Length: 99
Image (cartoon, rainbow, N blue to C red; front, side, top):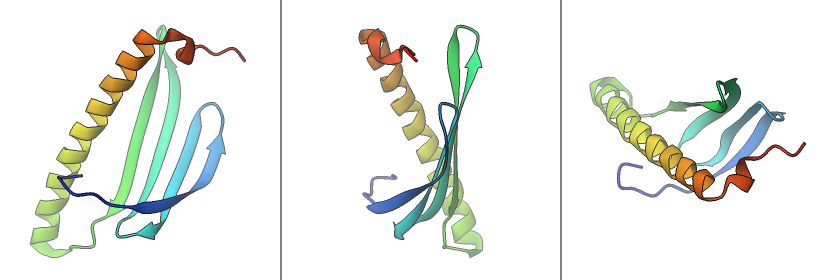
């Protein structure tokens, strides 16, 4: 993220297959919770991906940095979703729900 590498350990705190998965950090420099919700949409599926994180920077600099990190993370998520869409197009068997 933002040209830096961060290592962390997460734990699953909520798991409701096949529609909801929530995890949170338990080790590392960043505190965050990630929520993934899958919903049917048309002929496909919409992924709602949310990260709730504390920057820990505080003050005016922290608020500016938070916006920068949010924008960088949004670009990363968009790029990852585009890659996922390409992979699923190349390998449609991975997108099947065989029950």
